Image (cartoon, rainbow, N blue to C red):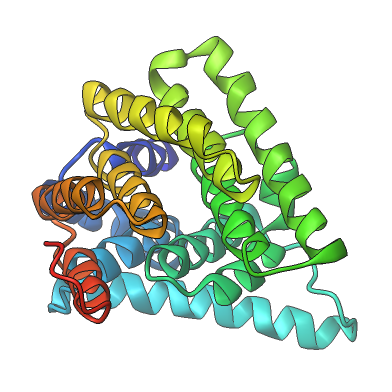
Length: 278
């Protein structure tokens, strides 16, 4: 049963969301048979991501979201019982649930909140080995830290940049073993790092390579996200033609992935800018 859930985790970026929901539904009866709470909690983080990205609220999500809520509530009790200011080390399953919240907060532009979640799954980020796609928490934590580095100064800025560099080193190590799976992530994170370091010449080419690698690899969310980040970079640089090209592609790819809520959020964000880009 754990193997089935790990398989679902790995498929998150390479399977359209509606199809992934159908696969999870098929395993639901088995989850109940082997122990309702434990097995549902393993799939709950993925179902939370699917729900948030798609914007769906039908009953098929309810018990998974409930299982995720119960799991996080247990962690809150552990924190209260510990009597410590720092959050105690949660179980591996709980850390994946917290990561799912970090990822969604980043994708919807809530960077401070994403960073708070990343602190709670610090053990997962320090030792990114084991089941599931452990490179994704590294990527989104790196992206979160770079988003905050843009708004920070002094020691805070240095801390965020150094943290992002650590995440990038891990992803590059993974890419040496399996370049097809990880190079798109490495180039995207390196592009964002170049932007923070004001190296616009490198950023342009790094974004372009990341977009190509994600598209060629069949990574739905990665292709959409790399286009979005490239588009926002060109928007900041004042190149509206290139920004529009990448942002239109991002919205199209989010929709192809089944992430309707994310696509609409990006549309709304761009509409509030006052410039007709998409």
